[in-house]
Amino acid sequence: MIKKKIKDIGTVYSGATPKTNTDEYWNGNIAWVTPKEINQLDTKYLKSTERNITERGFKSCSATMLPKGSILFTSRAPIGLVAIADIDVCTNQGFKSIVLNNKYSSLYVYYYLKNQYRQLNNLGTGTTFKELSKSAFEKFEIPFPEKLVDQIRIGEVLSKTENLIKQRKESIDLLDKFLRSTFLDMFGDPLLNNKRWEKLTFDDFFKIEDGDRGKNYPSQNELVNEGVLFLNTSNFKKNELKFDKTNFITLDK
Image (tube, rainbow, N blue to C red):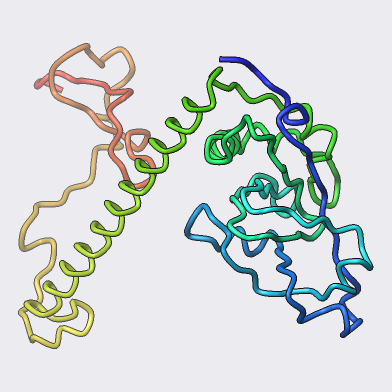
């Protein structure tokens, strides 16, 4: 692996926004994207945008036309969202986008930046909201295989893996919905009790008793290394029973 700074693998561009109160700058045929849209993507590729700007709007600000295959990286509100442009597009000022040189795979860079979300977010500065500067982003290093073909292969493997995970989650969600539907069909809504089931209480199934907090409560020197498991409130955390710190007492106690 060879580490390369982002400024050495392509050119980094910031975005800009035409004046929003000038109608002739908007509703044109130039795609223009905001971080909000990247956050809403359910795929790694940006194929369309919610708003377009006109040629006059484009020329009125410092926006840059990014070619298909560019890496779109949000540098504020929030830092760290990433996508691959599947169209020619320009961005607002919430991006630091990379137009890659031919020796580097957009898919490989996409997955590496996505995996380094926390590290990149920590590079942000600011009081009102954090922002990642162009200079800090350009200095960020990415390890690359020496051959482009290996970058492409790694990116494809990661993409296939991500798709399989997505399909598995979708299958689990569908199964969960099916189980819920089946339960309601068989037993009805537990709150409404529209099937008119007999209502029972815990006392019908369990014997519930309080622990001893009086004079018979074991002292520290009465605890032993093995015997009857003795639980207290420290063993119950966030609706779970924890056994990392357990005590024991003898049967006599």
